[in-house]
Image (cartoon, rainbow, N blue to C red; front, side, top):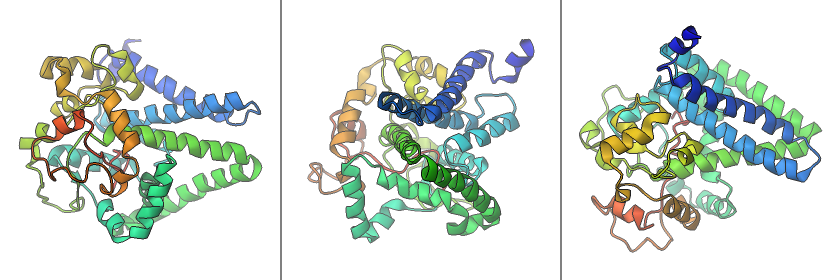
Length: 345
């Protein structure tokens, strides 16, 4: 047993990371089976379970990226590569995801290849279509990012050497889904609903945690941050936990809402972030964005968020320098799209 413990980043990780993986993988398998049931209530439960199980697997990819699961970097990478298949992001490599996310932490920036805000601004008809779909809670904005992920090696010049891999994964995953669609169309469509649930949860958490836009410096050798780099990291980082009083509600998203604590020390595993937040930032609720407020903003501004215009916040000063947290706590920000750590471009 001691050998198993020693493989983990810290001994407690066997139980916390192990429990998260057991739930994520077990929920994925049970959820998939439930999609085939003739019982509508079983289908409903299976969709929710599958969507959340994939979400937990996604957050475990994030943990692997920070090497907080195992002591060995390669062991973390192997688990991350496996979970990429669960989360539908295996078209590119785990190393690409990890590199971009490291850049996010080191530069205190959102280093990207694809500046999605500019793309949407250049295509107003597409923006209107996205707004329509987002009104129906279809995360169309993030689906654009997933489309680029699916064909990344054929779209991003710097990833041309991955084209064979990209094509093989497309054939495997695409063939499996279209086969499912042909023989069990209900199950195939319900899987898409589950996947959209994962997208919504990830975007709900990510969308208010930083106040900066994309910076097209992902493939630059010596990039400059627009936002002051590490010196201003905490000033541009915000926390939105499910609950400050108790730890357990935050396990729903593996404590990802304690984002200031995560940026302060990225090597702290998810299950210790609530305690580290209290130790470092205290328990003052004024220092975090309330869950209920975030939920209200996510619902109310889901259409205006596409272009960050045409909504009730247009008359507010832009930018509201140094006032992001107060404005967010009052429910007066649109929030962001397409900023998931699963995006590698």
